[in-house]
Length: 388
Ligand SMILES: *Cc1c(COP(=O)(O)O)cnc(C)c1O
Image (cartoon, rainbow, N blue to C red; front, side, top):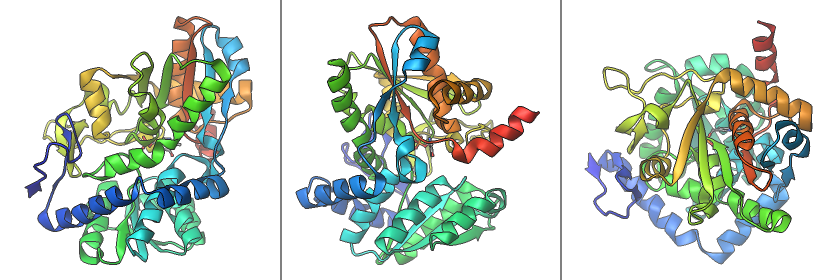
């Protein structure tokens, strides 16, 4: 095991870093070098912005939820509409950014792992557009539970590999993808879906998702002439939240609020530990193993969280709260009825908290909720839950 020794190498306080075997560290060093070379390169940025506009459909609106605001009373609620992106969520921003980097690095083949399938679909989509070979590792059990997403990825030209080793879950898919990467790194790029993993992934994913707050800051200044009182985002691995927070971190009067499911309260109840190659606040069971979580929102079902969120929890820059599954289910229906916008179950957690917060604030206050995705994917699940 090697541990990156430089303080600046992806550390946020004590969190982050890189706790991985030497052969994998070698691959991460090459990745870091290339990320640093291209991230501020004007041609690279121009290309990234081009695809965000022409393919993803950015910039997306910052919608004033007037009906919801009237119904709730209190602060004005605005929605940052990541749900309107191509493929219906924020994940495509990062997938495009990483694929453009992969292209610069000469990779011909993209690999990724997916649990519920959302990151696999975003990756397969971007690979189809850029003509890249795409291999998605998925736990065998998950391929059975998410058969439709497997078909979606195959339609997009990806090869989905069911992983039978271990328990046939996400962790086993991660291990299979890492083995593939170490063996094939000369032509292969590992596209990671959230602000987690060893350095440089958390920093890189933040860089590509920061477009969310770059836009929302400009938009709220145009509409309200001032910064928001609070920015609220759901937190799984933490990529939509870090993107929604990024351009406000230095604005100390803006409250940054991450919303976790009460059923997977990583930052609210976790402890510092090394998980999947980096240090973060994480939920452990009595044996010190990552604790299984059971959120109704598949995208929030992860026992760890990005290192920068872990750091902002400890230093107090951001607040992290929990919302129950049933409260998210209620918010899912309320936003659908009041605004004609069906939110993803993940995003519904953020909406549920924003509604509570708005009631405590005054009409002069402004809340931006990051609507990380649309709820079409969840309609059948909600139908089944409501029937019971
Ligand atoms: C994947 C996903 C999330 C959770 O991932 P983060 O990395 O925490 O953003 C949240 N919302 C939607 C719609 C997702 O697809």
